[in-house]
Image 1 (cartoon, rainbow, N blue to C red):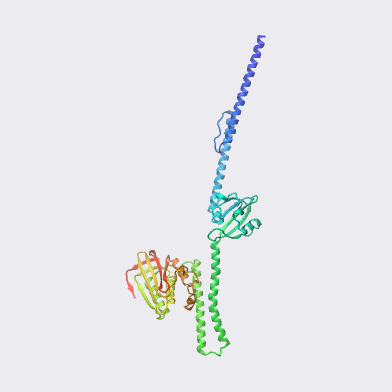
Image 2 (tube, rainbow, N blue to C red; image 1 turned 60 degrees about the vertical axis):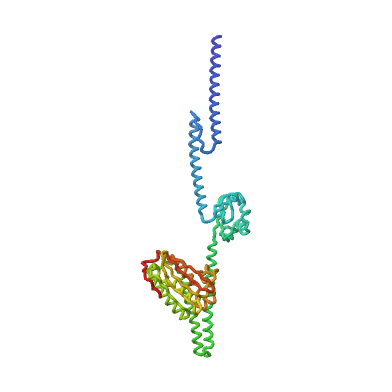
Length: 423
């Protein structure tokens, strides 16, 4: 009996020990499982807990996979940031819409174009914010082959070209481009064509009228009348020729034609030649004077500089009444050189001065045509001076005359001589 009792006692002890072992192992697994669950609730990138045995291997494998996933997430985030930076740098507006046309994302240009704010408007239906009927109809119409030209509601009068591009699962990308400058250029082109047509129509009408008159009554006119009609027709023909020549010159300057090879232009000779042309154009009707304070050499195109200087001188002669005074001069100082033309003619009101260099802009259209002006002279002057890094300055008072001056930078002056010449 004693032996049996000892055997039973030993079995119970072994069973109890096994049970304790199983409970300890279960508790160990439960603790590690709990630690794993807690880790899943921590922020991304939190290190996994450490453990021994099988759980150590499990944690090590999960840690490796976690690092791989974290690295991939970082790469995707960096790629997304680069994409957003690139979208922000685009000159066009970009806006992404969800299937319900709510705003998911937009860049700064889109905010500016449509008057939106990403901190306030993300998640809002775009048609609640951009309510222009043309845009709403275009967005809902589904016909996105053609773009939409849309006046912006923002201050400044922008004109937008809007294009919708469907993608993904019912999503849309809205591209917007500011075409205000293109619109202005198109308006300028139309105005230019209209002005050229008008300027050519008048002399053509005059020439045609004179020729018809002479043809219909060839035997009814005295030779002096015939000569007078032909002279007038020739004047109008020359006017058209001058207009075409100025148009060709201006076209070459505006289209960025290569500048002529730069020369060393003797200023004294150039100014004297231009002054002589002004005297011939005046034909003794004005009191002209020439001032040359220095004999300088100017780096540039002799042909273009002569054209610019001659235009300023001829304008002074045209717009100064008979008996008026006109002064043509050149001087030099530490800042550079200056060519000027001063007159005591009719003058120009201040509101017109900023627009003087526009093509076909005339303060007095009737007087300009009477004196043979094409309306392109100062536009040509502006482009020539720009090619020579020079600036045109105009000071004028109605009824008291005008002073047109051209300032050249010091770098344009070559080997100035200290001779003071005056005539």
